Amino acid sequence: METNRQIKHQLLCLLKQDDFEKTLGAFSRFPARKAVNPFFSFLYNSDELVKYRAVTALGLIVANLAKQDLESARVVMRRFIWNLNDESGGIGWGSPEAMAEIMARSEPLAEEYATLLVSYMTPDMNFLEHPILQRGLLWGIGRLAHARPGFLQQTDRLLLIFLQSKDPFHRGLAAWALGAIGDRPVIKLLEPMIGDRFLLRIYNGFQIVDRTVGELVTEAIARIKSAVSSN
View (tube, rainbow, N blue to C red):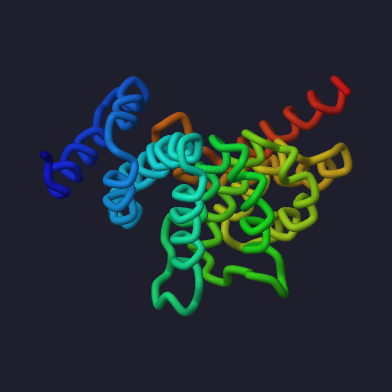
């Protein structure tokens, strides 16, 4: 029987594979309950690519777990919620991203927890004040918005606040999310940002890629126009 240390080493090696997309299915061969714990430590990895690939793989594992044992999947979600609680004593790095990835892959969990994820960017609710943690939250909101926009239709007003942020990651990621759920009036607010040349390193397509805020804004506008014209 493989030890927990051996399993963790194997999982880490898979996360570092050059062709990660092709190896993604390999994570399903690990027993979910044994695989989940190592991933919580991977979310704190200093290598950003390892961290975000851990988010992807964890999303797959927990979504599969939800099909077999929904309550066990809920336990994992509650661990993320605890990590984001002030009483936990930690920061909760990677928790919003992982919650969103899991919900993007599991509709039952999205039905239960999407509103909670939105509460983390809602003033007077569970608002996350740490600017770097907000980056992860906005990535998560965007990931879920692009996968299951119906769960986030009322969040555009909250995302608009982040378009005014001094943090270019906030602006770019908010625009990316709005591209999936925004309506025509949002375009007028996005257009002045097309010339925003701040360069971001973000996770997309299983890789860390360089994109400017303006590029994300341009894509968001095109996506909104396409959605409006098709309705």
